[in-house]
Image 1: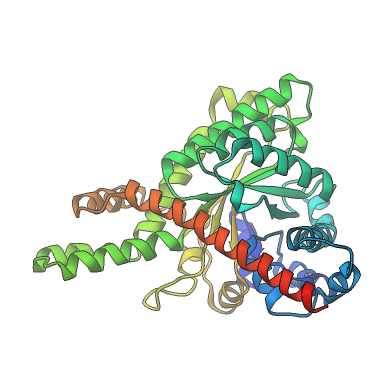
Image 2: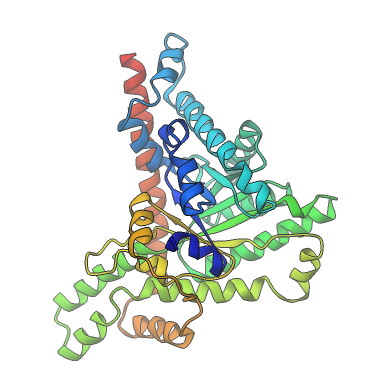
Length: 373
């Protein structure tokens, strides 16, 4: 059996972390759904920047915009909305078959709004209305200013994909904000059964930065014993961090408070594993899929990781294996002088900056193509 299809048996949904026009026009997305059991799709500024720069798929929009005085941002939004709507329409049968559990396509608010609660709220509402599909999610960054925006959007019945989560503490705050948002929506007479959300917890970037810190400490003159302890942490921290976040997920979405919402049809906010392609050649290319398989989770994989897992992935319910070992890994990291808070704070800051840079490059690419039309 296709290993990708086996993921569903463990309660995990496969989404693809990519979107370009050819996914819709050439049947690529439909093929993923039919052959691999794909159940959703995520996009971000980097993905759109590569799609626009690396193809002629959007020339019809550039031609239609000629002479109309549109800005690069206006045209970007047109193409992004068209692609996300097209993907959502192709995923609609999945949405219907899973009763709203899956079948979503995501579109991100501008990265420039990552630290702007009011701006995030306004843009998220506008995009939700513009997309006009029940099976879309608006991506909102899990920054401190993004947290109240997310809670408010949930209380208005808007589906949100909370992105750029790295720390267990921030994840817990987001999960609790979802519950509070649903309670407010229910109190206003809203139908909580039609609200869905995922919390996008990033994986590989954590190991990439931890490995750099390990390398620094080794080069700074660690003893043989210290070097052995440091190197023993390589490639393990991201998975340990994710496993402990999943333990928090199970705690938040249980008990009397959650059960009261569940009786009204509320769906849990699933944890979505993002950034699941391995960055280090020392690691198995499907490591961040194989080690994070569990119920009520999503893994959004880039196409290369989907291909690799289809070819040689092994499925087992791995996510709750050896939690004491995960706790020990996090303790050893701190004992080695590497602060997880410093790591995750830096990653959150870097994540916003990288998406802003991609967004600027995207608008530049759109502007250049528009000028040449």
